[in-house]
Image (tube, rainbow, N blue to C red):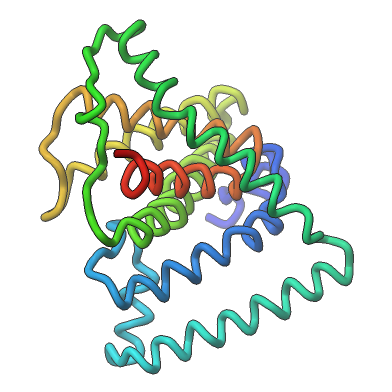
Length: 242
C-alpha cells in the first residue's frame, strides 16, 4: 500500500507554482480569526471539522477553547519570527497577495456571469447570485475562504491529482480532471445537508465555475491567493454589495 502513495515530487507538481509553507503562514491569521469568531456565532462552515473537534475536546468550554486559540497564536508568532529570521518569509509578502486577491475577488462575479450568459445562455440576475444575508457575514466569509479552500482545492484538487498521477495518468490530464471534479463537488456541497440550498442549475453552474476559478488561482498562484480571493469575494457579496 505504501508504494502507491504519492511521492514528494508528485505532491510538489500538483501544488502548482506557489509555496505551500508560505501560503499556510499567510492563511493562518484568517484561520485563527474564524476559529475565534465561530465560537461566538451561529455559523459554522459546512466543511469545518476542526472547530467542532476542538470544541468537543475541551468539553464545549468556551474559555478553554479560547485558550487553545491563544496557544495557537503564540506558536504562529514563533513560526513567523523564525521564518522571518531565516528569510523564508518577509513582511512584504502578505500585502501583494491580499491586493492581487482583491482584484480577483472583485472581478470574479462579472467574469462568471459573462461566461454563463455568453457560453451557456443563462439569464442571470444579480439577486440570484447573493450567497446569503446575515449579520455574521465576516465569520461566514472567513470560514468559506479558509476551510473550503483547504478541503476542495488543497485536499480534493491537489490530493486527487496526486493520486491520479501516481496511478499513471498524465500530469496535465490529472490536473484537469481533479480541477473539474473538485469544482463540481464544491458546488454540490452547497446543496446538501440541513442548511443546503435548493438545487438549481444556474446557481450550481455559477458555483462550479467559481470552483474552477479558485482552482486555477490555487494552481497558478498559490493556496494563499485562493483563500484570500474566496474570503474577499464572499465578504463583498455578503457584507458590502447592496
